[in-house]
Length: 590
Image: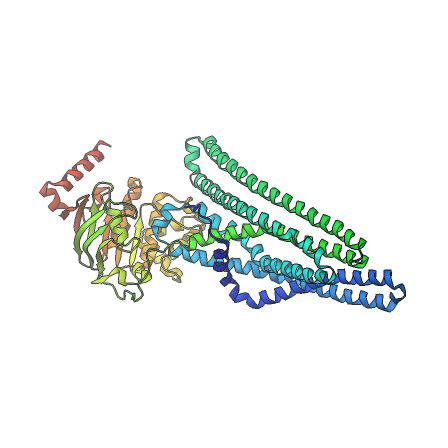
């Protein structure tokens, strides 16, 4: 979710500086090059002053040798300046890009560690904006920030010292304008920062809206609601325009105020300089140098002013980066977490209680159950009774708020997440296939698996035949989210993925509820084969698919109200028997 809090610039810089550490040699040399280019600019007014001084006081001393010496010296400085500038423009920019890549890698790594609760509250479009466009702003900022501040500091300090050597009162009058510029700069910086942050947040909103519309394009077209989607997009786009216009108004006001101060500084120099020349305390050569240094100083300030926009964009990018990096990874390995080792598949729920963050209502309360290795457990009950939540607690997608869950007698919180989840296979109702080939999607279950292993997994899942019938067989591109395949085909590929993983514990979350009868029959056969010999938890709305379960748990808001085999529960005539009767009556009516 978008934070309205604006972090302090000093805090952002402190968080950002460590990324320079591995490039400190490049940064140091880049700053040396920036210093060289600055020295070249500082020398020119002194050369002009020296020539003007001799021309006005002792023309005979303005010899050809003197002129050529000055020209040669300045030429050497310009060569050094050109080489230094080349390094700054090439290697310096590459360093900025590398730094941006490091930040993006850290951000993506942290996103992988965040729990389900974060993604349930955050739009993917906002995350995409932060990991792409926001960090693009950092490249230029990272490269130019040290340079621009060093150049400005050197020019202002050197100019002040040199000009004080010529005329202290005029120098103080000239530099008296600078504090006023600083006050206005600080004021508009805060305004621009807030505007840039709102603008970047709106980019994320546009990304989220476009993603939502395009991924649901079939629904949009089926309801002929293209005009509604366009209206939603236009509203977001209009808001972005308004925010960008606001940022430009602040930038314009900022630039205008600085142009006023530019003029004020020149007026001070021209009027004050003329008065000092009149009373003989300033020479014409010194006045010329003053004008050149003032021009150079104002150019440096203008560059800082122009860089302020880039600086604020960069700071906004760093701030939005920090906001994600500060999001806590709620599910973490304990300091002494151990790999799970060989798993038999015994699962125990000890006084398990759970409620979602920010909610008082308990989804599960005082649940005590034990499952022996290789047993199949079916979970049934009304929506909201905690079936999916219970299954999500086993691989630690969420942590229990009370009690504990044990696998082979080991608390899941004492195990490393990677080893725990490697021991658990999940087949869900909503299958997610990655953009790529059929082969790549199955091989995702076991990175590094041979082609023979992938094909064997597909055969076990009953998917080999239809895969070979595809245009490029296993190398067929499935489209985004598997759009080129039917629901049954996608489900069997997901089952093949779990076959390849070969986990001792299996969770089937309504894996056939979205399929037609023929696809359901094929997938159910694959699931039965997959579940054989594994500890299996099955969530099902189609109660006919779980009659063969070793034990059925009937969950309600009171916990597990009934448990037993299908026949035992039917003969008991309780809640399960009622649910089953309702289900079969509905099926017969269809």
